[in-house]
Amino acid sequence: DNVTAIFKIDNGITHADGTNTTGTIGIEDYYFQYVNGGLTVNVGQQNVPGRLTDATQGDGLVAMHNFGAFTLGAGAFMTNNYVSGNNGADQHTIYASGKAGPVSLSAQYIDLADIADAYTVKADVTVEMITAGVEYSETDEEGNSDENDTLKLYVSAKMDALSGKLTLAST
Image (cartoon, rainbow, N blue to C red; front, side):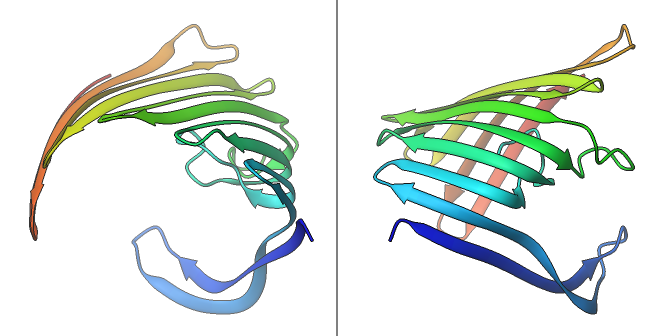
């Protein structure tokens, strides 16, 4: 009763210029999902969770536990499409997210074996129609002494159908 087989079927191809075409039908994701209370475990080919992975896919295991306003999770993947042409790279990730009143927090660490380590932390606060926040990300590539980091500060507002956002980013 707690196990479900999930298949995501796709026939669309999005090109680099943003156009879409239809192609042959393919199974994009296929995995088993076990759910028991706040615990969810996925095993199979699936989207790798988290902000750093940008919806890459991999073959592996993800376990998450929802504690109400907070979620903790971890994942391990044997193959992934995060690095083009290197589907053999093991990938391990841990992440946490939560909300306490008007404050939202999230963090993720990812290790792409022999390629890179990266982490991100994000916090924002929403008061009525205004949201303000900060996000910091850092990537350390193996064999490269340069670390890539990004700091973002942002503020946004929304009222009915009108919205606006101002972002300042530093790399």
